Length: 223
Ligand code: SF4
Image: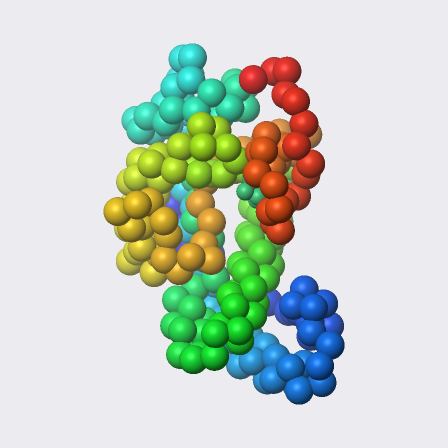
């Protein structure tokens, strides 16, 4: 099946959105981040790679996608009536990541980390919107290895996902480490699939104090 690279995302992050997220009140800090934001947006080149994949079969908690085997009870339940998925990686990009690593101040470094996360968030929204428009899909849901609880979709399944996508590092700069983490760390991966109602893994996740939570935890009776 075909694979595609998407870049040229138009990332716009208003300064007040950034300062609100960072809880900055001091004028000097705001001024510093105004400059950092302008620099980051000039340098950032987020990228996405995706591949349209056929779901070959589902048995218990095992899903076969283009010959690769994935083990997740939740994924198996979500893909029950799905024939194709988009396997994907989206990243803030190595350019802004390398730029941010030159920052020596510990606190500013943390702020830049959040800024990269916002860049990734914007790219991810634009990527998903572009897929919906390109393929005429009203709604897409996403799941990725390592999201949710430890057993929702084990993070080790990043390996077959990267194998499925092929040449991820060459095409996006994203490297998968031996412990299945991605570099740049502000990268996301998984599968997107059509769904009537958006499914958000956070609704299964019992982790507390997660700043990125998109939905409250709730009991699922269909998994
Ligand atoms: S609550 Fe946080 S850790 Fe849990 S799935 Fe959502 S984003 Fe991930």
